[in-house]
Length: 497
Image 1: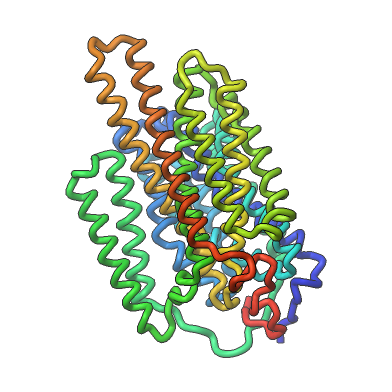
Image 2 (image 1 turned 180 degrees about the vertical axis):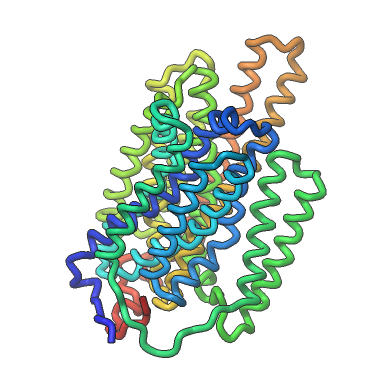
């Protein structure tokens, strides 16, 4: 019989947090670190501008469509086993991508990264959820985890710039092998092994097929809209197919004897509000990384390394706000106040960014909104992520955690497509209205496109502030962040590793 580990008294749990944090950082930063490497990879492998998008899309399609399956597999075969498989697979896929001698092999490696990322990301959050059950420790752990989730994209920009300029674009992929190796040793030693009692649940195959197809069609539809427009038949066809498959998935979950995602998980007001908040934050946050990066490099002439360094103050404020919020403010105020407050700060940061022009300087014109945005993300993300997994029965912790990642991924896909399309339209309209096109006109067209994206990003956060204020329960109504989940109070272990 396996040894039963009680996380509340296991002194190794903080080292478990380090291991889980490394895995989360690897998955999150991979979304942006590869972007910096794309121009060098294109020059090396000789693929076209039209093909370039598939380096990003291959990863996001596999990752987004398989997240719920990955989370459920961690419930079925065990957290530790799934976590280790995910680490090994992600490392192998990254090594293949780094060594790729052709465009086709690089795309295949990125898709494989997405597959194992979908296994790894929800499992990492599920390990955290089932390891930290004491309210104060849970708050601290989720503060760290939320800070990593929010800052990973900016870290990727900095790391990508350093690796591309100092070494080679391939090291943007090889670096994952190094991180995964360290995390693998830590997982083997510090992630606890917990025995399962009772029958092993079965995998809901029809539900898995339906939701994976729906998420694939959704991510593909938004990605296609970014390149071919909203009126392209493949764009709206995939989005309609996604809607039909999602409806079919919900209907199936209502009657399935072993549902992939019990509807009670997402229909809980607090958890539903948390998932929506993560989705909206993901959509709005995209404007910061993409368009501020464009502005710094194209308008102010920053190098990739300088661009990455420019985001460091935002990361600092994010980490500070995450720790302050989860340790002191969230237990006292609850997500009903903290999440809308973070969304409002996001609105302020976006509005300030709309004022940037070709004569703006980094300090204070870029620095101040970046620091406000860091505070916003550090205020809303840890509280949302903690609430999204609070009170879920341990046997469904993996799939509940996967919903957090799915919300963030879908939000990012929506933000990518919408903001890019709106920005491109704004630039085209400006150029059409200001002929002949000189260098000054082209510069102003780019600034107009960025400002359009920021205004829409501000709109996302404003909607998020209203929705989160209305949907989150007041403190004391049902579950709160100071409540110890029922599953955590159950001394009987329910997981097998």
